[in-house]
Image (cartoon, rainbow over all chains, first blue to last red):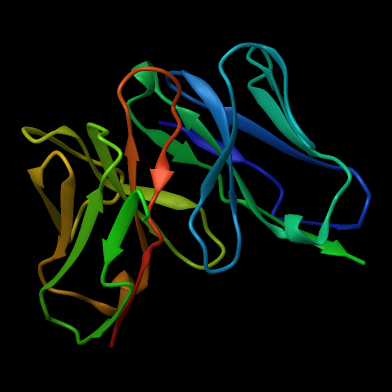
Length: 110
Length: 113
């Protein structure tokens, strides 16, 4: 089976940097994805790591260490619109399906 | 127009009723998924389909059934709804190959009284 752990909530101020950690246990690993979900909205794809290292997409970066079964999402220059829930997800063998973590609620304060 | 659509967006029903949630996509993707989300929790996979003739159970398929009527349509049915099936339901699509990226519909909020 697969399980993922991430913090339930993080609070920060505008302009700050937030790191959301995700540790996983899997029977097969195809890649680590991150999704953002605003209240009442649908999850939307943010980033994907299949190999070790850092992927940068604008203000957001994602990191993966396969040997440590660990990854993180880094949110820089926080803006109010970044207040949302962030989910890590692991793809199993051949990427057939995703298993999601419980989500981290990020609250950005002025 | 949205690439992945779900109908209805909201539904209130009573215990024991049969309910069908529908999902359509114009992305041309072959893989489709149904998830359930409960408050404060992540998404849990109910069923997934790789093509019209390939349907697979997810981690919480009991009490649900699906139908892949065409590559673009994937329906989820609750045969006899019960209150603990009250949740937000999402459909998602993905193209075979490439990354794991899934594209989600807007969701259906289902309440079973």
